[in-house]
Image 1 (cartoon, rainbow, N blue to C red):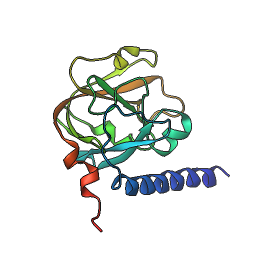
Image 2: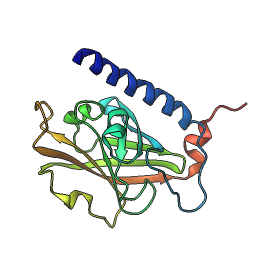
Image 3: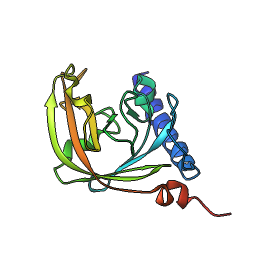
Image 4: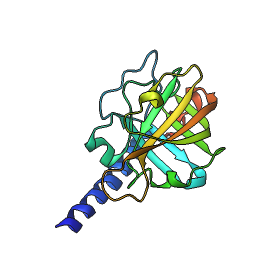
Length: 182
């Protein structure tokens, strides 16, 4: 029974990722402030050195985090000023983060543009440490997952990665522009 459920969860997450990734190529830039519904796909995150490529969506419910990386709704969207916060499970999409290093590149691709970040620091904090969600003056990206990575059961700590935005390119070079031309 347990193996069947585990297989279902993996297949469901991989299918969801493939379907949503294909939809990203048809996203169009928004005009003005963007309102994103709970569960709506925002974009794709890539960390080339780690081979990580994952779709991220609005929200952080158990169902969302089983299928994707979640954007903490109370934080800005990529391209908006402040601290963009994404969270994911250490046992699935964020497993490669155990090997992240200062200086690693992180790319976020959305319909509103492509955003490049560089890892500045990592830390381990308690689950109730809300400092990591605090707004920032500069455009930053914070990734959060459970820690330790190989802990069995609910992990007692959180692994936090902080990255600063390097440069932003306008929506003209975003996912919308690489859509197939008919």
